Image 1: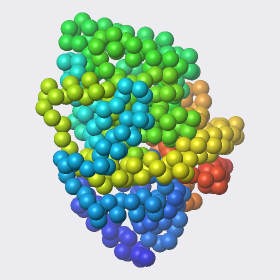
Image 2 (image 1 turned 90 degrees about the horizontal axis):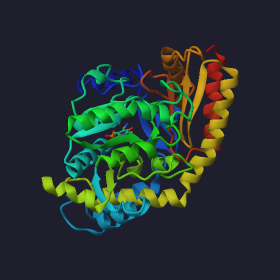
Image 3 (image 1 turned 180 degrees about the vertical axis):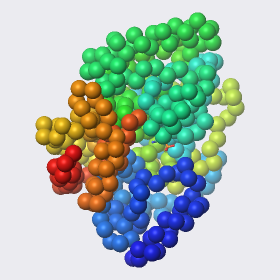
Image 4 (image 1 turned 90 degrees about the vertical axis):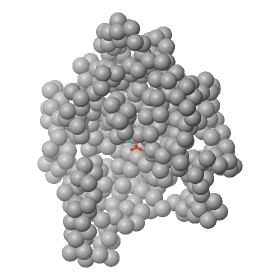
Length: 433
Ligand code: PMP
């Protein structure tokens, strides 16, 4: 246990030497020292329900995962330039999870890296540079993945500073976008046409299109019905490749689907994954066709020292094994459906609760000051998250306006924990929001 002065001193040291852009998500963040399932515990012994963790899908402190990683570390961990069973077996397992034809796997260490590589693949395969992406999106921090990230939540200058090969199209946000409701694909696609025509007129071709299959940064909003089918067709007609960023949405979190793109009835040319696949261990992957993968050879070989290391592969395979045994995708569906219904009930009682987005354990509760103008309740959302922390719930905001609760807990969330979250949220809203 730590005393208050010790906690304050560690926080001051953090502020002194951890570079400032790595922000604190609370003014006085709890100092976490232990995790178990969907719970976190701080150095003063307080328990928190972790409703934000989109990485730790199995839950915190899973003993079997820890044992498997420990055993592999003791036996072998090495630079991925060697041949060992785990890299073969994990690649096979990932290929088997992907749609037919996507059976070539690259193993990396994070979502940013996976998206960076996917962009390089699209550019190498097409021989073109231009990429289509969506406004209000986030794909990573590295130079290329950041270039296609247009969210202004963390970077208000994002829209004015994209490189010339990035072409961002109207955000198909069916709740607060230019066109509203699920049947707006034609309207949003109409806004894409002039962008594609300008790229065609430029004569340099189109490398591809990247987007999250369910719109995570915007709060888990499904894309308009039929949107991906049509935009994928238009991109492919120009020789471009379609990249599905499944870093957050994929891997069973939706409950009703393993992959986000299934919800739109499409299959991409390239899938990127990270977060969940390592349950917190740094792990990412790109899954594509053999032909697309091999187009990178025009630029030389691909190599990542620790991407696909023996420990990473064992971590990844153990996550898949535990997910299947504990039926975590099913749990995401049943507990997620229950939680979504509880959140939807808040809309009837509290005017600030504008809408519930998403499915499974990929939900967003959007707060507005006015249901007609949809004015984002940004400051209120921050205050609600602070109050939830006092009540033992870790919850944070997402979206360009930081007015959507980012509800992405471990997939082992119990019904009791979902109810505790809904009860605490209702208690806070009843206090006067
Ligand atoms: N894509 C999406 C959709 C993400 O949410 C994130 C992380 N928030 C990334 C990519 C980047 O992943 P990483 O932080 O592992 O680099």
